[in-house]
Image 1 (cartoon, rainbow, N blue to C red):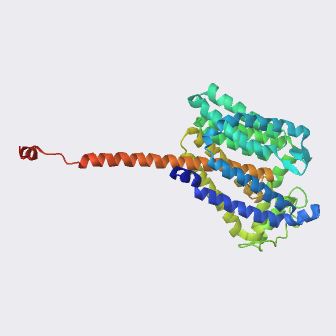
Image 2 (cartoon, rainbow, N blue to C red):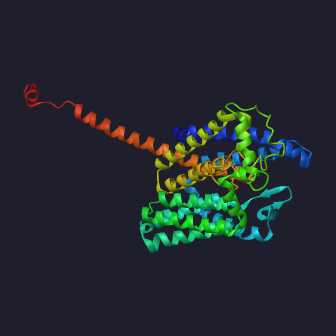
Amino acid sequence: MSEEAVRTAHGDRWLLLVTVLLLAAGLVMVLSASQALAYVEHRAPLYYFERQLASVGLGGAAMVVLMRVDYRHLPPLIVPGAAMATVLLVLVPLVGVQSNGARRWFAIGSLVVQPTELAKLAFALFISYWLVRRGPRLREWKAGFVPFAVLLGGAVGLVLLEKDLGTSVIIAAILVSAYFAGGGRKRYLAVLVLGLAVVFLAVVLYEPYRAARLVTFTNPFADPLGAGFQSTQAIYALGSGGAFGVGLGHSVQKFLWLPEAHTDFIFAIVGEETGLAGTTAILAGFVFFAVRGYRAALRAPDALGRVLATAITTWIAFQALVNMATVTDTLPITGVPLPLISYGGTSVATSLAAIGILLSIASRGRQSLLDSSRRSDAALDLGRRDWRSPLPSARRRASVPR
């Protein structure tokens, strides 16, 4: 294998390592948190774990392929991918599978696909490509900000049709971070964030159940058996874990006390079984992931890499932050999974594919820095050779025998 191929294959080893560690922790916790529910619903304790393992295998394969492919070869696929994601988002409220009063999934036999997870990657790719092509016009009001605001509103609106406020917030964060990395004006960015805050608040107040969640968030123990049940059970799980937890597999809350124990609220089971030490390790893992991801964005060899790496890193890190804040009752319940940890086939597979692209950007950025360093060293060596080359003086030339 050539030296260039070796550099490309390695990429950011630390970013890859933290991804694998978080993924391994997620598999362990899904195995532990899902067994009781899997036995009750399917008479098979490993039902959810086996499906998660298959999704990890699929996503891992996608990550390996994408980290070795130059991300600059992706643009021909970006527009068709975004169009397909948009069609799926339009169709899912009409013909999707209904669960808990919402239609967010397509079911093909035993295969269940959540289009909003695919849309995160598709929209991150599309908006990054669009922002880079817009170039200096992005800083203009009519030519840059207004078209971007329309695209953002369309993406968020499609997700809100599925009554999925949490995912719409994540997609908004992805697109806004891309706009910032692409060079958008800060005052336009402030207008954008303020507008989104107003829209999301209006959506919360419009739906009674969302308004109830907002009220419950301030004091979940006011109605511990009703609207505050999930939050209080999560707090009980975190509190009972103490410093080092009750031990892997020994959770009490996973025995049908805590709803969504293996999906959106798996972080509570992490706290119960591994304690403050385990939750701190998970939090530190995502912080380290964010540091390496934004580092890859800063070192990207071109604008597309910079914007895309920022969007993907914001997606994973911000979603993790929102999930952990929800479980600890720092934010109202939003219903987003913990990336790489929570059960969810589409979520983990899509996240791994996105991380593969991020690793590709990191490897090309590293290669660009190495090539630049070599060129600089070569120029310095050339200068030293010229400076040190002895030139015959007039006296020496005069003493040369004729």
